[in-house]
Length: 231
Image 1 (cartoon, helix red, strand yellow):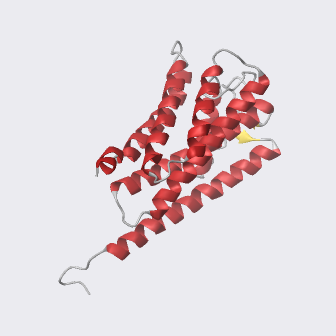
Image 2 (tube, rainbow, N blue to C red; image 1 turned 120 degrees about the horizontal axis):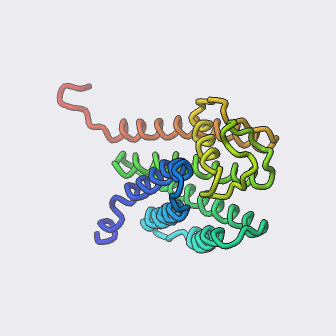
Image 3 (cartoon, helix red, strand yellow; image 1 turned 60 degrees about the horizontal axis):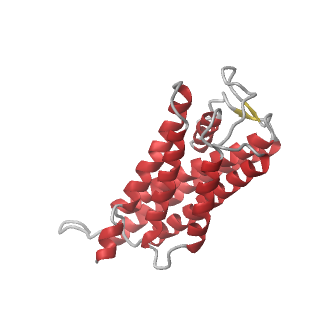
């Protein structure tokens, strides 16, 4: 009972951390003089919230814990070095941690036998995690190939785009625009890898929504008790 009380609301904390990161990314880049450390703190909060969200698992995911420290360490290490190998390793570790954590949270939601507030908030969190993970993948592609994306004329295409640094906001924006299939067309993938990844994200986002909503409806119908005047 003590453990159940401790982990209650863990997806609420995760969702708040994710929303804060998504909203703050373009704001920090837009407002001059705001220290980039704000995004590093929010990213750290997201990782801690993910670990907290997974703490209810009977066997706490060891792989996620093993990846969490290096992902955080290299993330903060980007503040002191821009070595190419280090930057690529940082991207890779952060992406790996997000992917593993997202899988664990998704499996927990799919194993749920009832529709609860945690189930709904967890499902929304996974949707946001998909967008952030793809944004990191786009960031890696963009770092390795600065011509992989065509950015709006106001964006400086010569800037180095690191996670949570200059220019990354455009890729977070592009990720969610792609995932929701809005397709404004102001940020365009040019490289083959970027195009393939954006197509995969668009399909993944739609399939996820369809499966998640179907799962919620199915659980509701299974556990719904008809009233006295219902058949």
